[in-house]
Length: 125
Image 1 (cartoon, rainbow, N blue to C red):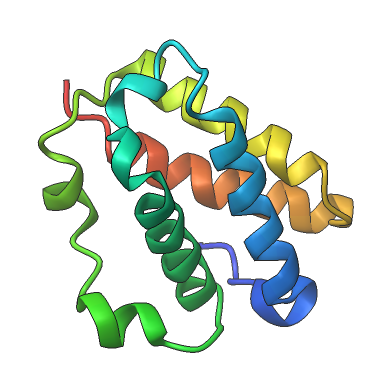
Image 2: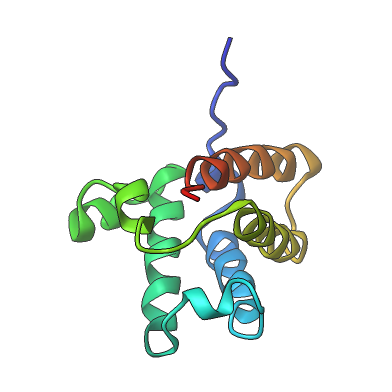
């Protein structure tokens, strides 16, 4: 049995999802594991791509699909070394950003499971 998807976009709204992504990207540049994985000249672009993906994936407008097509997450992350340490740090920074926002405990738990599954899926080393 699979867990039913929650309409996170409807429950939290685009502003909260945007704030979560912004909180994550505030932490990335100084992080010793994730910081080097992100080109400093494209931090804003990376933030926009993650924001668009999450808004789309959680039930918001499909702007991400219109602009970038299918997410193809494994292919797009293939050039980067995504090992267990990178996965765990990504989750650590993302959960810290989520915790800054007004998400009810069940919504936070859902986000942790959902994002954790994706982060694990992207491990490639």
